[in-house]
Length: 216
Image (cartoon, rainbow, N blue to C red; front, top):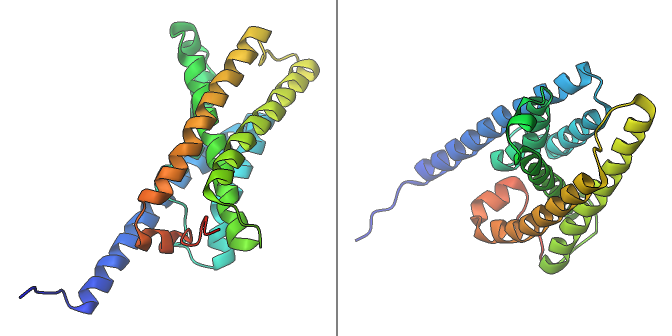
């Protein structure tokens, strides 16, 4: 005869798992927070906007639900933090000068982060509005959001170069190369997030508030 754990033990295990996930998410969010503080101190305007947007998406479920455990998954938080961390490390230009692939890596990380923001927007539209998207349209939305955001980002870099004499846009070739990597990253992450939600357990979907996502 199969032995079952007492109900209080099952609840205790679920609570411990929820607390552990929240703690990992909080630690990851500190990386994003201090990176944003760093670019604020450096008056790096575009990255200030990026950092504030990412932090806003992070705290929105916590504030609206009044539940500190309703934090984003730690893996998403790391993806949100990765481009700003790479940008900070690129500030010395040492990595760019030493490794030819560094620029491509930063472009790909930026695409992953923009795709994560696009995915979080679909989640929060489902959670807080009457908007509903099916799985296929959500993948398309993430891709188009990534491409549109990168286009506006390039415009911001051009304005910065014109007004402040910076050299964010080195050449037309570098811009096209960066947009190509962002396209590749957006396609990858659009399908990755569709598979990610499908593979996630119902318990974790419920904890994160993703349980009714894509029920169209």
